[in-house]
Length: 340
Image 1: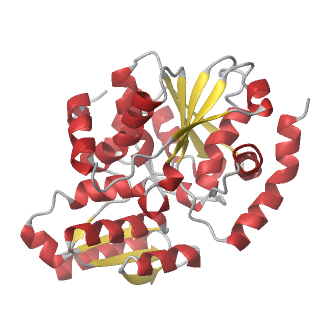
Image 2: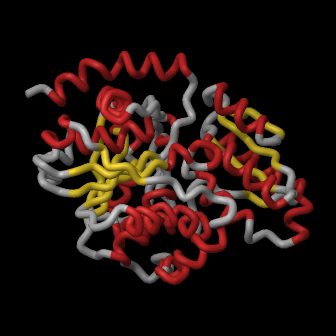
Image 3: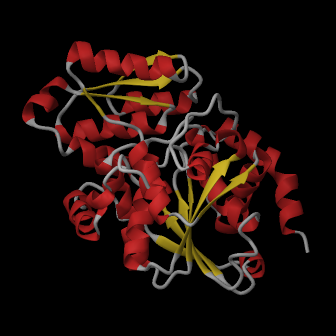
């Protein structure tokens, strides 16, 4: 830790509980479900997987929590000028929804390679959508809207208010699921795992928190290895929600303090996780959610033997055609991972 390390004391357990209470009327307390299947019992050596179903959250993903946490902090003048966001899709949907909750307009910038299904969902939430090239152009346009229109930028994954919002996932999981030995969370920019890990570890320091990233978008894994937040030269993964090219200081600091390990998986394994959700839990999820269960079946399997494991099902915003294609991609890997 250096003297410039961000102060993570804002994520105290009292603050996490206060934020969850403040958001409770608008946020769905998503259910926990024990995945009671023969396969999972065998994979976990008699352990159990408890699914935290954020795929049933408002807007279809956990993103609603962080976006609303930020939106609720705006004063009357900021509300009048509206909000903006930069996103590959899910955050734009959530930011537009959050803006509606506070009576503000939303003008969001979405990457041009985003799934059209998600673009349509953002528009359905009332957003004015601007399409820009992925990466710097998307963020530059959002910055222009802040500068020229006075809009408030709701960051997709960085900042105390965002992590306080997502910490509600961990708080609810620990309250509703009983004793857990480990929690497994997919990582994009780190906004979800930073909040969950802070909640979980302050409630039960002995509960392990494992992160999962695509091999082609391993920004948090690299950042934790180097001890500083880093920016990748590029990303390459089918899990678009996990394709953030960088970690940022606040989320990185929380992960450094509270996350035990980050594992990497390839795209075929992510798709195998989607197959596992479909066949074992009867859930149709997006790749980001598939990654968490894939890690349980794959690189974390030995560490989780006999354990009671929380698995965050982070979202399900995916169109039918893409879903079917990725399921087909994952079938043979799923069979290989679960054989025997």
